[in-house]
Amino acid sequence: MLIVPEREIADLMTREAAFDAVEQVFASMASGDAYNFPVVREAIGHEDALYGFKGGFDRAGLTLGLKAGGYWPNNLEKHGLINHQSTVFLFDPDTGRPTAMVGGNLLTALRTAAASSVSIKHLARTDAKILGMIGAGHQAAFQLRAALEQRNFEKVIGWNYHPEMLPNIEKVAAEAGIPFEAVPLDGMRQADVIISITSAFAPSLMADHVSAGTHVACMGTDTKGKQEVESALLAGAGVFTDEVAQSVTIGEAQHAVAEGLIKESDVAQLGAVINGTHPGRSSDDQITLFDGTGVGLQDLAVAASVVELAVRKGIAIEVDF
Ligand code: NAD
Image (tube, rainbow, N blue to C red; front, side):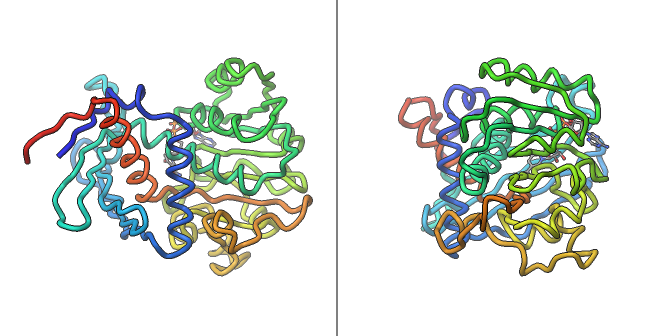
């Protein structure tokens, strides 16, 4: 069995490798070659922690396993550790033997950024110039960095509920040599692509803040009750997701479906667009919306990819198990 510790991931994993792994697994999900297992998430009644498992099997990539982990709100204060903690375990689908244990913290950020990035590649207009960011927390920086590689963006605009956090994303834009402007929410009307990545439980981005032809990637809503954008926005958009079952229960689409504005059958898999079985954007004026809920197969795909890189570089630790 191989171990790839968290400390090695930053030097091993590239945004390109994460993008390829996620694009491929979304395609496998849409063609029926890969499926996610039901998610387990429990409040364990200790340290206010939420702990759970996200797993799946990709028959095409022969990747079987799970990500175990969750959220420990007291970690930073008490232990100097980040609050989100996760580890990926991979198994040999032929025998059930464990093959790898991989640090999952940085990989989670990279695979989440890769997901919105894949959606931009396949759904945003090719002439997109202005990228709008809603959110400026930990994930937002990763999202922005990955998104900037997908189109020739000339400007980044940003809004955050806590404006003092905006320098987090301004810094990323500056590193890429792209001007940044803080805007009010209605300033998002200038954006060609908008990424929202917040932990909000009430919508910030309203339907009339979004212009025709924009691609919106909603990446923050991954739990029942969370919401980043007004439901009416989904009603007027082409809606795509990583996994439909998650989108309508724990994703952004949960609200539009509950309010009867859209039906489950209105939500398409991004993987179908990648596979060419769904046409994707229907016109330059259509608003497209990607509801990125985060699936276990994304974690397994990037973990398998990092194990390969670690083996190639002689960094993977081999243990007899
Ligand atoms: P963070 O705590 O670092 O940042 C939270 C962000 O949400 C900040 O920008 C903050 O200003 C904003 N925010 C907080 N309260 C708000 C409110 N009431 N209205 C609007 N904005 C508000 O968190 P993070 O690590 O950047 O994660 C952001 C979200 O992404 C979380 O909800 C997390 O669960 C989710 N997430 C999703 C996936 C996925 O695969 N879809 C993966 C990882 C994280």
